[in-house]
Length: 274
Image 1 (cartoon, rainbow, N blue to C red):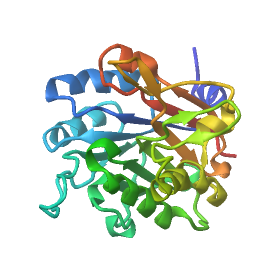
Image 2: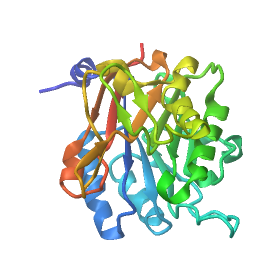
Image 3: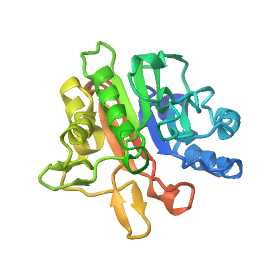
């Protein structure tokens, strides 16, 4: 018979399992299947993107049933200039086993505040600052994508005494080569390219390195989203994290996408802070 000490030996109680997932604005009938799939992974924290005004009302109770009782959603619909394309009509949801406090959305100078949600987790290892983002795609929203990248970089490009995580769907990059070259979508537009790369690569200078590449290098190819028309894969979903959080595992959960739960594969990271 297993004892609690046996379980603690098998998995350090200070470990933190994070799943970041674009749930693709799925309707209410799909939410239970999505949450059941999450439950099988036993996450401590989930960060969901493309949560609608309707599903934001249903998700909390389902997530609480699997132990993620602390839930917050971003403001889903935002006021916008009628001359601009409508903002993405979906927001962010963060759910956690542990309490957290919400950080003001005004700290991010981005076009649509509901595209980022920030909290400070009260984890067993101490406070962790978590930022979940959904960067609008450039095909539809054009320079709003660039402005969102620029705002994220402006807010996070600084020293922090508290370990940090940035995760979400960034709709970038276009390609990654085995020699470590990263190709942004705006490679022919200097400001566009600089904005994408400032987050995808530049935040590493401020202790927010790409966890997947830190663990696997550039010799390994993987994708989180596929353009079905041409079966072209993109690695759009990322987790960037402080070194002190000690990420020891990072993988894409392709079975979620293959089961039709979303058009994105979630990214899962296990942290084992000392």
